[in-house]
Image (tube, rainbow, N blue to C red; front, top):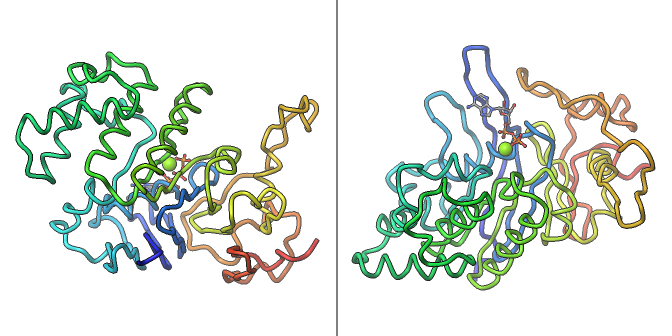
Length: 323
Ligand SMILES: Nc1ncnc2c1ncn2[C@@H]1O[C@H](COP(=O)(O)OP(=O)(O)OP(=O)(O)O)[C@@H](O)[C@H]1O
Ligand SMILES: [Mg+2]
């Protein structure tokens, strides 16, 4: 059995806008093993959502240059006709968005929105659709009567559960969760993540969990990829990354995790990474982290290659081994 669920190689994405070209993704390399939860972290604007939209075939091809390979089930999704992509999207690869209220229609009941995806992909009659929707709602911890309600009648946590029910309704192989808990308070965040984890096990899903929150990744993921300025700069097993982060950007992100259990490692101000990510209006030359990197030197002006450093770890940095 194939162990890889998704293989992304040298994925680049340029948006052709009236203000100029935005070089949003620069040769992204990402592999998701079947059945794993893979975290994708990085600051705002680094390309996490664009990566997921490219996988889902949701990038407007007219105003975008997409290059590279997104291989799923031995097909390159980037070159698949829209008709074929439609049979994969929502059925074999599905997605949960950050903001459920913007993703659910305010005009349709929860039930009819969950039924819609199943009706598109499966040959089911009304009764079957209704009973599958009821059991999906129960599976995500909601009462089956929620089917009759409208999204605005539900709390944020309940809406996110509806999105999850919708996303898993067609038994997908790959689930992309783009910041699924950002809008929720901490207790509900934990509940939604626990739900995602239990569904992942029960349904043998492969999950790409996109988040800003490094702590969330180390607690919930098998592997993690760190993104910066449209590139994956490091990939490693999530449990060991705190101790063995190789890229200076990964270390900087880890250093920003608040430590509350011991009363705070950082007394007073929380640390921040000084400076900000580069604007993406020109193609990257060399390492994009140079202006913020404590280790940068002249060699970093050259484009760093991805180096396999063993133990399932890879890093894209000239100075990763230096202390
Ligand atoms: N349709 C578009 N046209 C032009 N630029 C775009 C478009 N979509 C995204 N971008 C740009 O691509 C870059 C990556 O955006 P993306 O939404 O992937 O960031 P992100 O990592 O998901 O950030 P966040 O954590 O804030 O969600 C940003 O600079 C963004 O402005
Ligand atoms: Mg995003």
